[in-house]
Length: 329
Length: 173
Image (tube, rainbow over all chains, first blue to last red; front, side):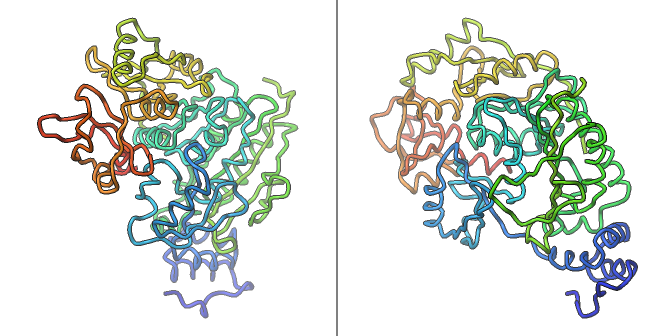
């Protein structure tokens, strides 16, 4: 266990912080330097908070059931849930029985819920797909946000879910099926080729591939494994995907960009390129009127950041941008 | 990282008359005599898949056809089933969809013990002798949850598990 008494105080140098991150928390030099430079002594608090996996949460799938029905069924199985008031169908799993686990109940198999972090739920909600619209999920992964978008769209309109990796596409299909989603088209392709589709989308979600440094509590090995090369390659991929996403977004449409990374290289730096690309591009608040949620403002107007040590949430960066209506094609 | 892009393109197409007849036959055998009016497409892979587009998702059909001309549409709409030779085998998703719409009558309910066994992929004892061997049954749990599809083995007096929702867990996702 780390002894916090020896940890640097806010006035200590970046080098001291870096040393502490390496010595007491097992970070490699590269990531320790990145976090120490970006967050200062906050990075020590963050590293301490990431010592344990985050609290689990689930999203009720209203395509299959209702909040009340699911809550009542899971209560019988020994689960205790509490509402997350800033996402629509999100619940914390306060306690659960030894068996079945939350990922193995009958209700899970029936598609009544999806195990998902509240920030991921918020990101999908932030897309606010227009009724009957055509929406793009450019890095769909296994479909956590895709299935949520289908739910929000009530299976109307169309969701195009793009994912290049075979094993993930297979899991994506399985999740769409389990969750009762019928309005999705799954394309196995590199998202950087999306402009070849010849379609303009009313809204785009780009939850970009990233270093996943916001998930160190779940994947502690990333503290050792994340390298400068990884970051450089991923940043290039993120920028490229963002440019393509921007191209296929219809004028007047909105793009939500997110990463589960703590590093501004994968958040603010990437998004600032899109803001430059767009001329009169406007960033939009991702908070719906009257619904507040724990976050800190990002360095780009209206963008938000989530930190484990401040919010007890996975680390994320989220920004929403609207494409001007008079955008030259 | 983005990798392993598959370039195999399979266009989606409408059903030919034989395929349509095979679907009608399977539905009729299971108490769903009318072919649904919503669109259906065939996905030609190593085998043939049927994809269904329910009324709320009708926009997806046109988009899928358009995209499949040049791109690898891995999946779209609702999985309807597959063809083996000329015979059509309905999927659990399609049977459930028809059942919820009141168009699938081959249904049987099992108790809690059999529900658990069935969701583990096991065959179970016949809950009733008044079942027809030629039908495909949608198996429901005690709370009327859809558990999967089954056929009758009249010799062993067993309900044969064709597919069940435990598959979602067993396949590792």
